[in-house]
Amino acid sequence: MRKILPALAIALSLGAAPALAATDSGNAAVLQTVPDDAMTVSNVYKQDVYDTKENKIGDVNDVLLDKDGRITAVIIGVGGFLGVGEKDVAVPFNSLKMAEKDGDAYLVMNTTKEALEGAPGYTYDRENMRWMPAKKQAG
Image (cartoon, rainbow, N blue to C red; front, side, top):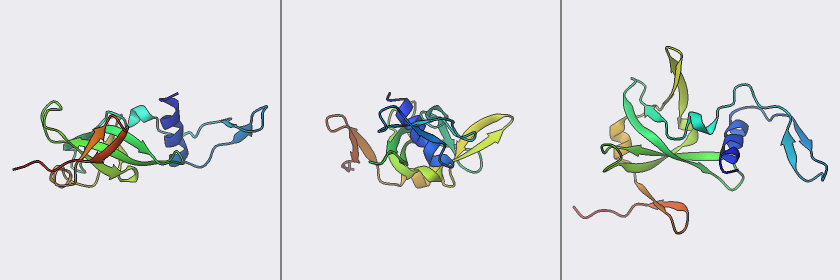
């Protein structure tokens, strides 16, 4: 269920609303079709992100939904090496675009790695299960 809900949210946020039908109980709606241009969570989650010049600027560490189930933001890990020293920043979901080169799709943002590194950082609070502003480190 955890994988299905974000995929459904992405599908609903990317295209026109697909046909819905009530179940026997009349309370829940199910999809009769899915949009042809729908993107799955696996097209976004844990994928590398590139700038407009095809330089890697980070990777998607999380996908955030609002209370209505719409994807509003993604957490991008920037900097560091193999995850060590990486900084997590939040960006609007609609700032990510899909691009294609040689038949391979990839994520692109119109920004720079330096701009992301300069953005406010976030850390995941496992106890409260939410992203929180990172505490400033003493320099």
